[in-house]
Image 1 (cartoon, one colour):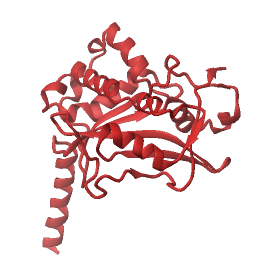
Image 2 (spheres, rainbow, N blue to C red):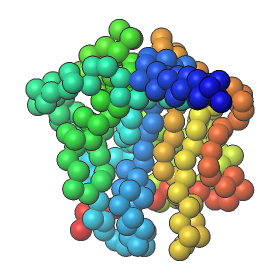
Image 3 (cartoon, rainbow, N blue to C red):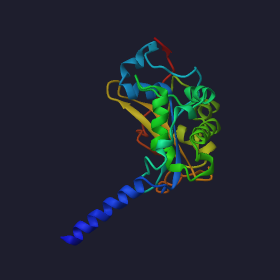
Length: 244
């Protein structure tokens, strides 16, 4: 009985240690398609057939936005809320950075101000990658995420391949398009709407080594994309609607 208790306590210690340390395998850049993300977060799927939206979206373009830059373990626990969380301060987000993030890294939850979304992302994830020179301050963390977004923006990748909003595509076609540019497997997230019986593209994750070189998000599937999408069904890429 004593050994069982000791082993259990050891497991709890390791869980807490790994969750709160800089122990991770890769960096994950999560990109969102704004229209789908806002509908999903706020449960506004009744707007899919509307001519306008209650969502507040960044300036109109086909560009995707940052959802987060996360330290990730391919197997096991992802670190969260590491030391340094108290270093957050709104004075670290100057006017120039605020304007940049408002367009590149907006939050979509109604009633949740952008500054609170950025604070949450930094304290939960940014503090756990402070061991990297390019992300060891609050400002560096946000700027490197925006730099990676600009370099590998899914909207631009899709647009250059002829995949535009207000259209459908197959998972196979999308995978080939991303594979051609990224060269590594990624994670693709869809939302399945039970009312319309359609699936909508929502997020795509691209992974990097600590040196910010591209890498596989998973070694289990090698060059195959990981996804929650139904790969044999069409994927809807909704257009961005004007605000009501």
